[in-house]
Image (tube, rainbow, N blue to C red):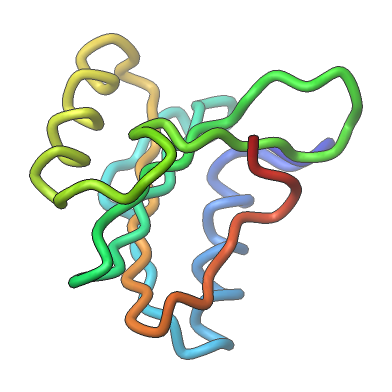
Length: 111
């Protein structure tokens, strides 16, 4: 996460930022409050669902990858992907965002 922020604090900030933009966001799964990794599930309803995962980058800019592929997937497919990742990493956080208007994008760049 961002330099100097615990994962729990970063998640809280993201929920707050979404709230200020009238975008529903909630913590679907809590992981390690200090250093857990994060998946962001963005539900766009008829437009499908995208799961973003952090990507390694050589610079300090936050970088994300579309973990479920380049195009949105049905929500059950996204949930199955998340379940597989949680089975491998019990410290994983899942932030779910319900984006009716297709407005939300993660901070940083998306690969």
